[in-house]
Every structure is written in structure tokens, then in C-alpha cells.
Amino acid sequence: MTKQNAAEGRAWPQDSEEEISNQSFDVLPGQGLVGYVMQTKEAVVVADTTKDKRYRADDLVRSSEITVPIIYNDELLGVLDSEHPEKNFYTPQHLQMLTTIATLVANK
Image (cartoon, rainbow, N blue to C red; front, side, top):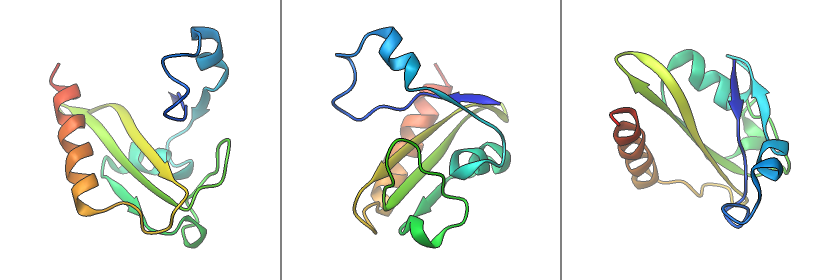
């Protein structure tokens, strides 16, 4: 199990630790797209969340999602996840950028 800390771009860093903590919820392997990535350790890009049974809405329903594992020595450290209200929003460049960020974070 992992804890998902979610916030819109405007929420951090203005929110207090308590407010951020209240936005958290547990995600089990296999639960939603984040849980799927936890299980498979493979990135996922969903162009239209209404067509993907794995999608799990959190505070709002959004139309596209990208989810990238953070892995070090084959151990899952966490998952980067981003959602957007527009369908087909995420591009291969977004995936490349988040994969690079995940690699940098894992190696720190």
C-alpha cells in the first residue's frame, strides 16, 4: 500500500501540512491507474479516462492521466501521477519528461 498525496498546482506550497495530509488517501496495488503502475512498474498514459476501467477519480473526474513509477534497483519507491481535464492532453514528450524526473528522483 502507498499513500497518494494529491493537490492541484495551486494547492502547494500555500497549504499547511495538515491541509495536504487531509488530501491524502491510501492506494492499494491494482487499485486505479496508480495501483496498476504499482503492480506493473510500467508507465501508463490514458488519453480518455472514460474508456479505461482502471481509472479512479479522486477529488474531481478528469479526462486524461499519466502515471510513471519511481524505481530504484527494481524497488518501487513511489509513483508520479498527473491528470488533466482535456482528453488526449498528454504527449510522448510528457511521458519522457516525467520518466526523466522519476529517474532523477530515484537516484537521489
